[in-house]
Image (cartoon, rainbow, N blue to C red; front, side):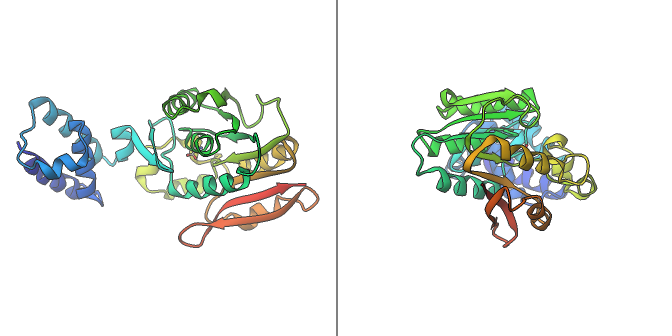
Length: 281
Ligand code: GLN
């Protein structure tokens, strides 16, 4: 089978399985199975796949037919210009989270040696990209999942920031005795249990449940992070947290004006408030 034939066949199978971006996914999976960049596919449509290549492509297409996210099949994704390793142990980094990173970079750039703490590091996308952008920064990043911590460690190593990143197993701040941080950052599990049932099956059936929901109304972990961050931040320190698409009003009520100032929400491309920024008094 040639590249052109393999692609045609895969697009057909994926479309029949109801995969929306069949063409794009088929190319990604074939370039993964061949271990070659996408440009190779365009340049060599007549290339004949070896038996082994054909087998691994077939397996990848089969997984995608079952609606497993492409990123879990290839084990790779892009975030903030970095290639990251992902596995089903972690949430696939989302573009909304880049809004958090961009604003946290802006807030910390002026400091000489900023220290921040991340709650729920997952793949490490937030901490690794912040440390890349802020060469004098150091961080403590925690997660409840040992597998997530291992993946974050590999991503930090890959991007040469492991020396400035202290990774710990911890439920919120339980293993963090340090304080006076310049920033706390988090993309917490903010989806309510009811909403989980309505999620796209690609998310609901494949991404880690503990990364998505608190198992209740979606505000549980958010509330803990806000309460504890007050004690962990230096005066004038800043909390950045991603929130769900209808949560900004409820979250605002959790930020007492005796403790927090300059509260604002950054919006995503659909003008939905998605990232909280609040300064500690
Ligand atoms: N910090 C990681 C991310 O933003 C993991 C977040 C999570 O698992 N809720 O993708």
